[in-house]
Image (tube, rainbow, N blue to C red; front, side, top):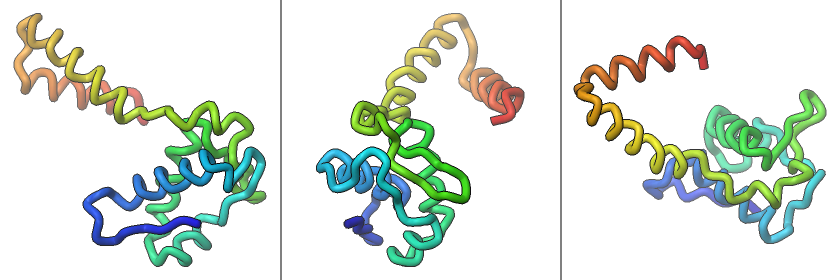
Length: 125
């Protein structure tokens, strides 16, 4: 059901995200259905388990998947509503606006980078 193109320039975790979303969109996976374990899917696709874990984690963040601890990972009850969530796209739109605002206030790119890194460090995420 899920295929990965190792020769693609698209990162593997993103290919996984797209593939999982498509299987849900095409109703091959439905809310409540279980997904393979991280190790199992990594072995089936012959990729690193950290890659699968990252894809699962990002899909959980977007409420497409839900992890139930040792019981496994499942399609979120409202997955179909959340398939269009794309944090990267939102960041790609919003960050340039913020940077432009900081530059207009007189901040240099170096000051913006330092402040951004410090803000990330302070939030601990």
